[in-house]
Image (cartoon, rainbow, N blue to C red; front, side, top):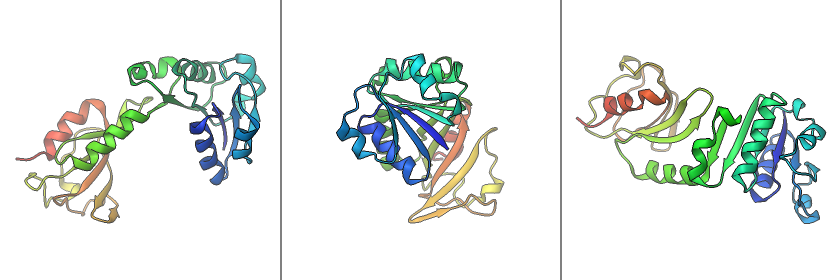
Length: 219
């Protein structure tokens, strides 16, 4: 897979290293990359230019990449890169970093963003996931399909404790992804029962979240 990353700061370099470790081809675009920065990601290609410029993206051959990642520290730059990647180069997948949570509402398909990654939102969700029982916690949003990855820890007095997953009338569009039980990761097989304290991960449409929470909440 060929990946182009806009922004060679700490975030861009860390993502690049992970992708390189998995055998992907990576090009990093940064207009102020120093030799020290480039040396920290020796397996990546570098283009010293502005990722918001159409000519830069043409030079990067963005039309040949599978994923474009806008990872600069400037929300405006990330939005512009995502928009150009999607509209001018028809990149199949765009991922954009959200720096200021108040700008998160802009990161949607109208700006060419398939996946928006907000560090403050992710950290808050992880905190909630660690302490909330019986409450639905949104972990991640898939912008293209208006679906979310959500988590719910089953309370002891849920009406579905002891029920088989296959027997529960889940809301339309909801898919059980995995069951986390103590130190085990369990597939959501139809015959598997739901137990108190299970962490259930779902992919669900936004408009089904309330029904899902009500289904598994305490009596």
